[in-house]
Image (cartoon, rainbow, N blue to C red; front, top):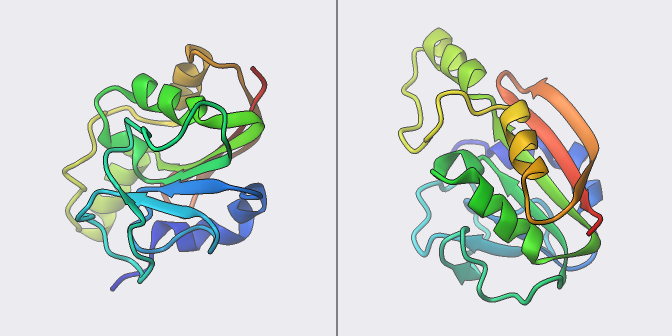
Length: 169
C-alpha cells in the first residue's frame, strides 16, 4: 500500500475538522478518526485500513439533511466528476452555518507534469484538463450557498492545492 494523499496534509488540514463531519472518498485513510468515511462501496483507492462506513456516490449525500455537518473533507476526488458545481453544491448543502468545506485537490497541469517527470501513468478518472484552484473557486462562487475562503495554499506536495471555505449562508 502506498501513502495516501491525505497523509501528506493531515497536519495542515485536520485542524478544520472539528465536530461532526465526513471524509468523502477517503480511500481507507480518514483525515481524522472521528470523520464518517464515505466512499464507493468498492473504493478504487486503497491507502489505509479505515473501512467505508457509508457507501455511495459523493454527488448525493442523501444520508444527511441540509445543514447538519460541521465539516466536509475531501482529498483528490472532486476532479473525478464531470459536474464540479453539482458536487460542490451537495457538499455545501450538508454543512451547518459556519461549517468548513476542506478540499485537497490536484492541479491537473502540475499533476500531468509530475507524472511525466516520474514516468508514471496519470489517473484515468480525472475529468478536467484545466482543473485547478481558480477553477474550483469559480465553481464555489456560483454555488447555491455562500462560502467564504478562509485558507488557501497553492501547489504543495508537487501538484496539489489546499482550499478551506466557511459556509456563511
